[in-house]
Length: 196
Picture 1: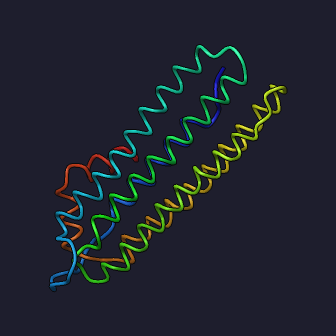
Picture 2: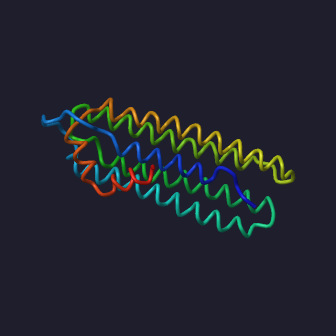
Picture 3: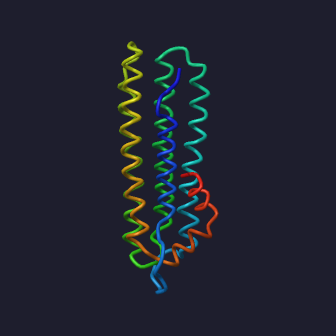
């Protein structure tokens, strides 16, 4: 049995973290308090990369598990576990991003706040999806399939909107030092590559 939209959800999540890695592009030069841009980029992009890679691994596991699923109840249970894991791992990723603190660039506090807010919105998308997945019917195959499809569309829409907000962070927070730091950081490059 296949779950529609699971891989699309993953693509949206990868695009989201890829956009977050692109924060900062131009300007800069003055000393500000906070994490050095290189350290900030390494921590933030590292956390985002770990999250994206974890989602991809969990998705592969889910796809393999679903190949052997014989009934809707089993599919539902595995789907719920996948979404719960995505939510938990998003929480871990957000904790790591928070621990990085704001970058030592102009408006670094605001950038950090917007970044954390966007990532929290992505986590909430998965939390809502868990609740909806738990409510899916298991006695009606068509109803279950429609419910999974609708749920996937909801999460996709929310992650896409969050990704669009992230794309605006690079324009809103224009800093040469941060741009250079993210362009030199391998984990940021990994994220940019995963979003294409």
